Length: 256
Image 1 (cartoon, helix red, strand yellow):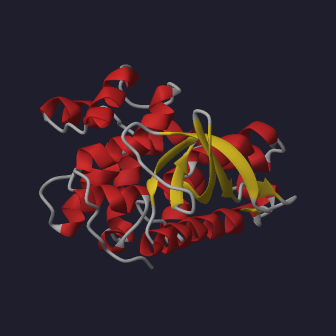
Image 2 (tube, helix red, strand yellow):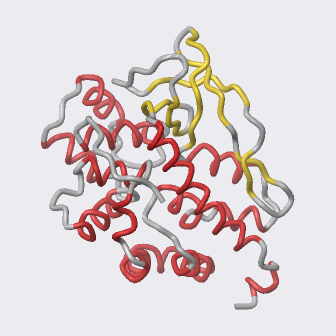
């Protein structure tokens, strides 16, 4: 799956374009979202920006893992950053043992009763892509299993990196056509395409007709044809892992 490409942006700047939306909402990373926005809007990458990026303690360790497995010295190499958010062939350098050890060190004590589910998702073929973190590490899939649908479904949909096509510029934002996640009784799947109004992350320039990456209610950047196919492939891969887990009767899960 995927293809390695070299994005034109500095890696730290590219990282922040994807990480800024949840940071602005207060979900992850450093407290100073305005500082991140100012860096990206100015197109400046310096040691101060790198310090802010390291504070994303959910995402940055994945970058370290991908870089180490690929023989790349800098976790903020743009190829590494692209691998985590969008996907490229660097992900396949991280074997199940490496990912399993990293996940155990980071999440075993926090996962509690969800640990078996998380461990099994690694051995079922999990890769250090943002869609793995959203679908396997976060507890929202477990809440779906327990019958709590609306909020878990909203968070899973908004937090994954999804894709869409810009259809129109509107005052203060864009109308983008994309396919949201929907709950089909026992599985997660992509629903029918819908129009949504979104904002544009600082420093991002896109046009009507562009394929774009979306995180929460923000456009993170344009996707070329290879990046679009790669993002779709890795997202579908981890969605399949989730649906295989959801197919296991709840009694079997609780009885492990």
